[in-house]
Length: 164
Image: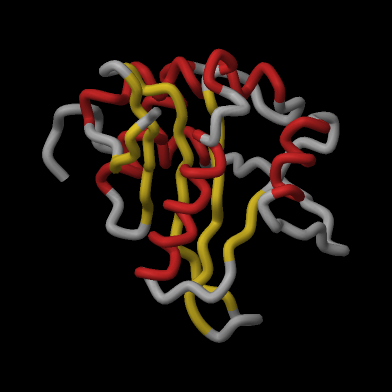
C-alpha cells in the first residue's frame, strides 16, 4: 500500500512525469516540463498551497494539489483542487481516494468549507471516480482567458533549490 505525505523539492522530477500523464488526458492543457516544474516549485514555496503525494517503494505514484482561495459565496476559504493523477499501474487500488481524503483533511485544517475542481468532460474514468467519492456536478461551466502578461510573471518565480 502507498503512503501519503506532503511533497518535497526532491519529488519535483517525479511529479513532472505524473503531470505529463495527466496532460495527455486533458484537452485544454499542453505538457511543458519547464512550466510544470515552475508551477510545482511555486506551490512548494506557497503557504496557501499543498502538494500531496502517494509513494510506494520509494517512488511517487500519485499526486494531488490544492490551493487556498477566498470564496465570497462561502464568506471564507475554499480549496481549489488540481493535478489529481495516479500512475496507471496503481489505479483502482485506493490511492486516488486516499489522496482526495487527505486533501479534504488539509482543506479542513485551513478552515475551508468547500473544495472545487475541474475535470475534463472527455475523461469518463475521472468523472466516475469523483462521483463515486461524493463529488457533485454544478450548473457552472469553466471559462478561461490567457493573460498576455503571463511571460513576465513566470520570469519572477523562484527556481527549484532557491530560497523563498
